[in-house]
Structures are given as C-alpha cells and as structure tokens.
Image (tube, rainbow, N blue to C red; front, side, top):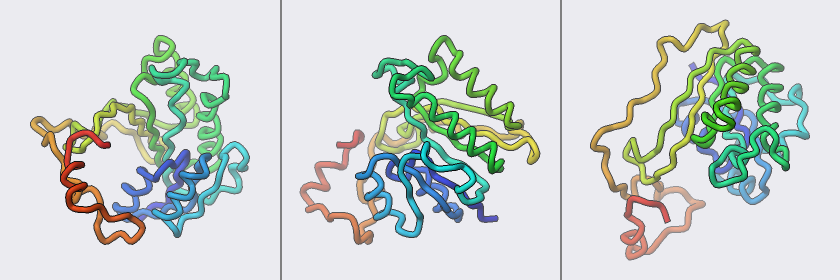
Length: 218
C-alpha cells in the first residue's frame, strides 16, 4: 500500500529517492539551503519544497503517513563543538520542530538520521532525551549505526538511523535493521550509481568515468 511521506532537512533527497523507489509519494519537503532546494527541484520536480521549517506551522503541512528527517548533525558531530541541544545556532532544537509535526499529524512511522556520535553525546543523555520525547508522543523506537560501505556502496559514513512506529499500529519487536554484508564489494562502478538516461545530469567523458570508478567518492 503506497504511503504519503514528508522529507525534512531534505538535502539532495536521499530519503525521497529510497521511498519513491518503493512506490510511496512525497507530499512536502523542506530544506534551508537555497542551492540544495534548486537541486532538489531538479531531482523531484513534482514535490513542493519549502525553506526554513521553523517558519512553517505544522498545521499547514499536508497529512502524511511517514516523516523523514536527517536533522542537522553539527551540534552532535565529533567534528563540531558538540553543543547538542544547547547549540549556539539553535540547530540542536530542530528536533523539537520534528516533534511538533509528529504531535500534530501522528504519522504511522518516523525515519530519522544523524551522526553516530548522537548516541553517546553528553554521556548518552541526548539520546535518552530523544527516546523519551518520542515515547511521550506514543512511539516505539529502535536505532542502529550503519555505513553505506557495509552494503557494497562507495562511502564510509557511519550514521545513526532511528526508526519509530506509532504504538497504535504496534511495536518494533519484530523489526530488525539490515545486517552488514560480509565480503561486500570494495568497489562500485559509477554506471551503477548514475542513470545515464537522466537528462539533468552532465555526461562525463569515458576517461573521467574510468578515474571515478573507485571506492571513495570524489
């Protein structure tokens, strides 16, 4: 059964690409950076995309079954100041906007993504707060740390993936995250990643394609 989903802090649309491939429909997207908004529109022209999510009333967001959010990671990243919810730019509090949307629309499922350090930030207190807030909204929560390279994709990027289900639909007792593949290929052909038929992609010369057929992205 197709679901309606929204894509917050959308970036280039990773969540969108995955869920659309499964037959679901994106009815709303939000991304602060204008250059990323432009790219998102090129990739997904049928989806309305807006700017600053903090300026949008949750009531004005279309009804949906799934909320996806790769909320800003700088407050929790080891490469940043790790200020967490006390981030001087208030990026840590953006999780509260996600909760406000969840409280208004009560989606069936929640998919969140962030840096792996989120789980250990502030001696685990940040992760505890996130779990408690989602539980207070009547959601069962599971999380795991995974990286694309564990599944044969050309990127080392460990992230925490958080899945939550509305308790009215059941629990996650039977849900399991995918198990990393042992012996996954160390290489990935760019021709398997980029669709040559896409009209908004600049085609590379053959010699350039040979140079980017490597494990790590350029």
